[in-house]
Length: 358
Image 1 (cartoon, rainbow, N blue to C red):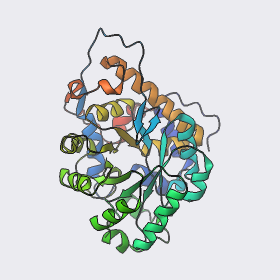
Image 2 (image 1 turned 120 degrees about the vertical axis):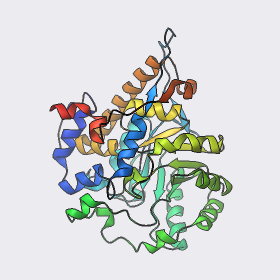
Image 3 (image 1 turned 135 degrees about the vertical axis):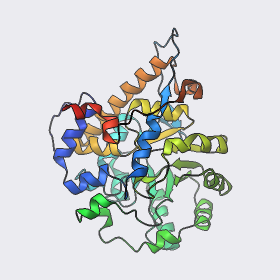
């Protein structure tokens, strides 16, 4: 682990993280499935949105706070669930949970991340979210959700785009198996999971229910029919179905279909403050950051993640001010328009200085 690293800009996390993780863990974090088309389209979708500033407005005071499921956040950003987090951060999921609490945001714990939900729940007295991979029958599902609720998790998130595990060629080529996949239960449980399970879970809990992995208006509307509170637009960071669309490209149509009847979250290569602003302008209530969390956590542990959130906050603050708005509530699609992406792909799009030897 890099000690006392000074992280001045987002680029600084990349080299430090790369030095601290194995080749397999790096590919797990930074790669996608098969041809990595969905992975690259996530970034291309963000790069295809241009910002349209308004000038000569008083933006001397900017408020970036928001509320998510009744809880106030310093930024509209959730640390997204990462299954094999311990492959990146030895201490596992307690690190992002503690970092989120220190900063004033929330972490969504993956059910397969170590050291387990009870230990993570007990590490801080602060709102946190629980994301579930289905690795057992209905009784198993209901029991683990009950454990999460008993331990004070503020909402339950069901991952629904994982009927089968995506073929991640980078890891397969190097025979790397993420920790969360070692000894994993048969895929059949996740493959059988369906809307009747959502209905049962909805009827059994009184906290917000989120579905993560929604990618069509049809499924978003079905989610509303089943009483879902949160629609999380995601393609698993481009690591599940290949040749899908970028999450942010799907965002406006789903927002329009939902018409404010559920909270909308989105992830997919959201790595900079401008990315957050674009997603909120398109109608999202909050975004999830996964790879950026992994990079900053691998680079500097809890302090690294907190510092990443601080830099993200500065980038968001500057972006809002330069757009001529004082809060996220003032954002709308009036501040964005389509644009041709520059042609940079993946990490080069997010961290262009790396290609210059920075």
